[in-house]
Image 1 (tube, rainbow, N blue to C red):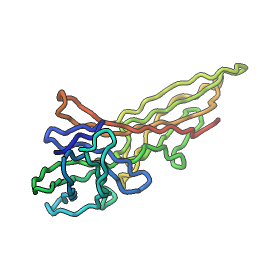
Image 2 (image 1 turned 180 degrees about the vertical axis):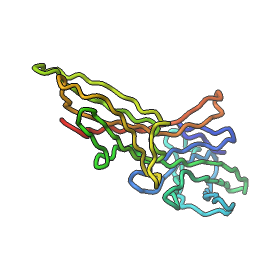
Image 3 (image 1 turned 120 degrees about the horizontal axis):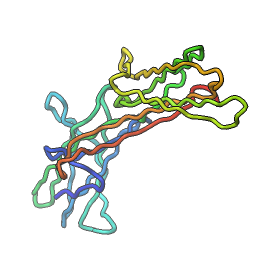
Image 4 (image 1 turned 90 degrees about the vertical axis):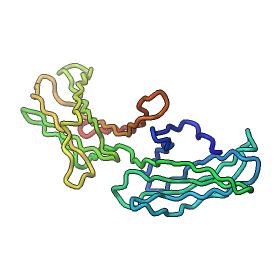
Length: 227
C-alpha cells in the first residue's frame, strides 16, 4: 500500500496535494512511499484533460532507513503550458505477486510572489500616488504599501501601512501581474522618505482532515522609493 508523505493533505476526493514551486522552471520531483515486503514496480502517469495518460519519469526505488519495508520513489512532472495551474497524477504500484494499488495525486504549481519594481511607481506631488505591481502564480491576492515619512528636524521615521484588497487589484491584460494603487495627500512638514510594496499569493483547498481549509502562500517585499 501507499504511505502518506509527511506534511501532505488530501482533497475531499482523496487526492493528495503536492504543492510545487516552479519559479526556477525546473520540473517538480515528488516523493511517493510504498509499503511492501517484496520488490515493487511503480508507474506514474499524468492524466490529461482529454482523459489520456502521459507516462512520467520515475526513479528506481530506495529503502527508507527507519523502515526497510517502505520503498521511496520520485516522479517528475511539469506544466505543459504557461497557464497550467495543476497536474493530476495517477501512480500504480505492483508487487511481485501482481497485486496493485493506485494513488491519486494533484500537483499544484505556483511561483513565488514578487514585486515588479520596474513597473511600480511613486508620484510625489501634492497628492502622493503609489502603484505597486506584483506578479506570481496564482496572482497575488493581497498587496500592501508601507510609507515612511520623517518629521522635519527629527531623526525618527513614521511608517503608515495601506492594504489593497483583492477586489481593488487591477489585473494586467495578459494575466501575468496585478496593480494596486493608493493615493494620499502630501504633508510637507513630514517629507516622504521611503515607499515599499509587499504582496502575497497562495492556494487554499478543502481537506478531508477535520473538514478544514489547508493551503500555503508566498510573500514578497521590495522598496520602490527612497532608502
